[in-house]
Length: 346
Image 1 (cartoon, one colour):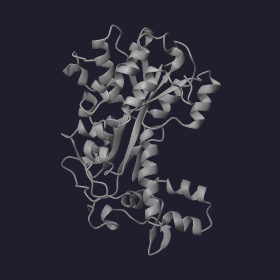
Image 2: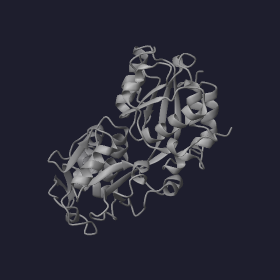
Image 3: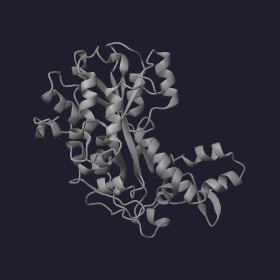
Image 4: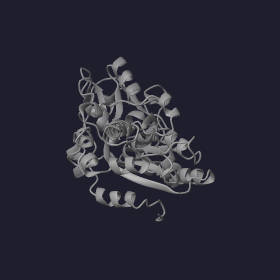
């Protein structure tokens, strides 16, 4: 299959206005701000290449998108949830309680979480997960003891980092990016510095220590961003010493405003994520309500189009915007074609 009408306009990263959602001859999609640029590209290209209306794509975060998705079956409910993490068991349960029992999970590829700062600001080129933990955790390890965090500047614990006040704009808790940030950065740093071991040695259970590892300071140095990446970008614009957490694709589309930090000496890129060299990456998904296939025009066709070789493959337009192609893409294509649902059914 060849999609010859994939135009420059299809590559514009824009969210479709929520006001367009009234027409139910259109596929309705909501969720992850990380997946948003990819879904927007695909939606516009889909509208240009098929005799179906252009799908409506909204953001709001992975958790918010899945919450809407799980509210029920019927034309008043969304058809697709974009997510920068896998759906959780409690969300599957919430779906089932509302009659959403057959869910098709579609893995579209991989993305990296990057740290970026003002283009003309300080250069953060020596980050490790331990540095982020030391900057933001309420308690840190100093001289073998777990103590209240005394650090004010990045250079206080790593001389290779700038002597700038610590200020990090991190994804809010409703974003799938937050979960990956916690698990692959904060939790890894907690363990690497010995803080987790010290918590357990001090009497905490392993579960409590894991939870404590994910806490961040509430003194203003860590600022939750509940909106999408444009809000994080605005915060960076207003704070010369700030560092923000973004998806790779968003950073790559804003290199005129941002410069990226390294993590464990590796610069994030499609190549370093594909090779596994860059340590902070994650799979991206969307979820389809099977009950809406055949009811909402173009729903299955949209899903198949999204994961086609021409779109999500290594030479497709999504790769140009930072998506790392999934080595198992052909298996995903077969599963979607067969309408296989989570749990192994179809």
